[in-house]
Length: 230
Image (cartoon, rainbow, N blue to C red; front, side, top):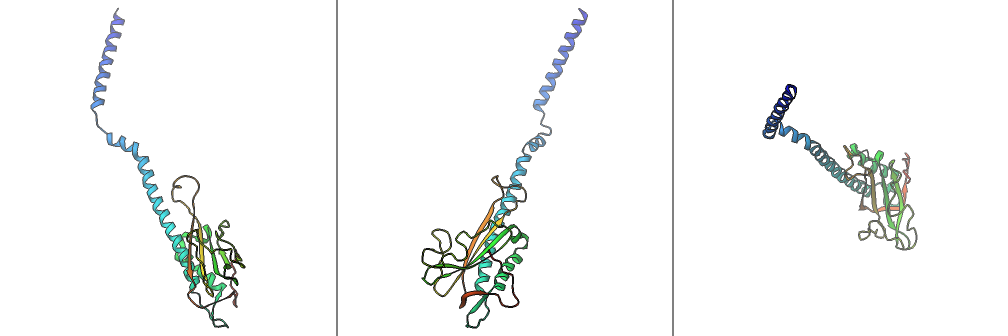
């Protein structure tokens, strides 16, 4: 009987001790904040990093848009006198327009991660719209003009012009529009927002030529410049 009696006493003592500890745990608030922080820390970190990523993506979109405007604007201002008295557009001027965008936003590495398409939209002999010449630069070979290649609309009036539906730009007679399209493969800092692969940013800009330009051709006088054919 004595062993059984001692076992019962030990069980009773253990139950009492567990009851006391349970009461203490229910009322103990020590390190509660640390536990709660450990639970929510991953969520807070994700939200914080996501905010930084979103801000960086928004800034990149703005810079690509500005790069497209810069290229179109610089190409529209090119001036070099020619024998017929008009301003001569040269391959050198195209290259300078491309280079200036890279210098303005060197961190983007726009020609390593993307591609620029510059088109000269003019009128053909029938009064229709025509992509007279087109130049491309950048390693992203999937970046082609959304509105046509060089020579599109060379005859007739079927080609409406360049730009999205409802916002198409058209060139006037004896003038031209410099239409720049920029593709850029966004590189996330932390992770892709929304899942999936990294987005490809596309922006376009158009500027009327600012001078009485010689539209017969794009020149390449000596010293000969690199021709960035598409």
